[in-house]
Image (cartoon, rainbow, N blue to C red):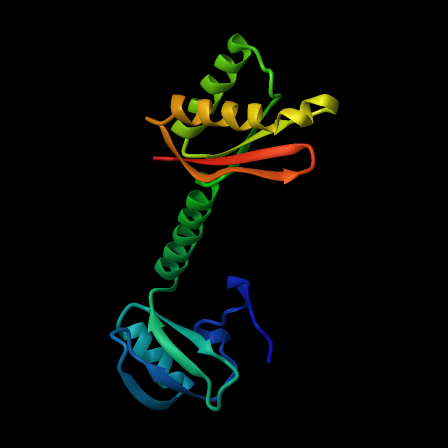
Length: 174
């Protein structure tokens, strides 16, 4: 059994190769098994198209519908799904445990911009050398960031140690 994905592969009207088809009306009721000529005539009488929806069955199942409208609605659904999935994009902001207040202010400003655009934000604090002895400084820094953006977003994943030298926190928009 092959799965067809392209809309060009769907046979409509005269492209249907079978001599008889099981016909489903535009309202969804079964009209029975008809010859291909009769089925095409039923579709044309309604000003619609005959579309093969199950080509592998015996006889093939065809539906009376407006194929152009169907393709348009399908493309709109795909476009809407793409638009929604893009909104959940993950952004990352990297910090060090002793980041100065001025630099931290810029990072928080960018974080707020990301949250306004409905992005999820992963904040990562990197530790090097002797800084690893002060993991609590990283936790304090992440808590401070969470307090400053509490109006724009909420903490989805609290501060956790991701690796030996890294601590992360995930924030989602409200």
